[in-house]
Image (tube, rainbow, N blue to C red):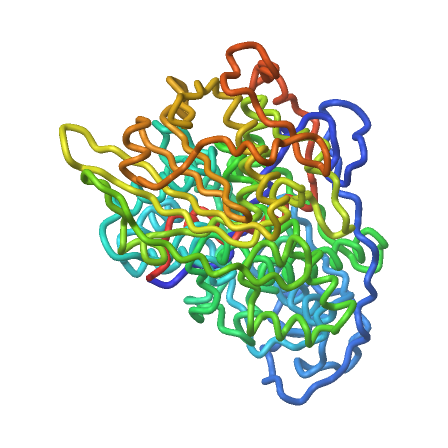
Length: 599
């Protein structure tokens, strides 16, 4: 099943995310206000040029609303001009009562001209725009896992499949969901009794305002039943950039369907990064009054912008390509020009570490031998030979989410998120606890013997140095401490109740940290008989060199017990990324996360 494409999520508002802090790391004026992201440094668009390879476009329709522009006697062969509309044309459009068909057509043509002007490249053909009711979209979306043709519309505009899954997989949906649950539970983003499918759909699917479908070579606008068409012009520009990418690179190509969660997010980094970069340049010209731009339509509640995502951990994970992607693209343009972006589109990045640090990262080759006993087995038909790779971005989000929701002593979730090092980035995903990532493979396990199903996992992580491995191990143990584990003589840590109950074994061997989780300590050793969770004595962990102190064997004794925090206390309104989040034109990340890669 091919992927759908980029769903542009209508202003997924982040008001409840971090309290009174703006996305640009600048305090907002007052709690409760919604500030727009600080505009990134201006990058001048190249002057329009003419090319001879593009086919002639359609003539302007009767009733066109264009007033004027600088593209005198231009044709569709001129970059910055399409369908009779110039990139700097003023349109006589009143969006307050919705758009007529003629107005929408002119708006699309002007958007195409503006994408051409910024990208310095011509469209090869027109991009149809159609409408769909939210009910029709919901029916199409829920069929994504059925293998039907309708499901093919639900790939992702980036051409990707799943931020942690494939477009399809061997086996039925329930088997995949059970496997995928363990991936998100290992990330401490979905609890033991939770459903990854519900968390992903609940977080993302309710806010879709439209999407570009490579399969249909069209943009679809999702309109509430009985309402007129309204559209965010910046989001339209973003989706039109995906349409141009599809015309030049074929977003349905398998190289845009990552086989692991980390690869999926990394591929989205270049695809969404380019689209977001172009959109940012559009916003700059609007702010500078170089272009006439329609006001952002007011949201009436149906677009999802007035509500918080069901799961902030899922949200922040899938937002990473939209945050780090534009910075990644900006650096490529600075060093290599647009030709470098085209080359990365042909050969996309494979790790989020590359898009976070904006430099090539080559993950270690992790080999794994299954040694489980007493009925425990992997899922060889899921993921890559039964495993997933979650990567640096997802690991960062794990520690961030646990700090925000459960008061885990990982790092300050407010300040770290906004320590961005690039003007194009919205959030920071770079922290010493995860920056040394060199690879990981996560193997979900199942045991169907007996009266009840049991689940667990083995998570093998590799780090660039032993210091990086100690950093991750210590932060992970402090995260686990927020759930009151009891340290047992066999070295395991047992969480008796709560959302992340069960037994955990953590072993570090030089640059490798292995984590095993199962319902009971005995099951831990059944899944991985040779795991050695005993605390190393030769290298006591101190604050030296940035290594966090180790947690006590039993946090309930009072030594270094994490401060208990009401997880709802921080959820005060006041934060928003305004324009940036309106551009969370997410590759249908809901589908992206719910589909699955073929082995």
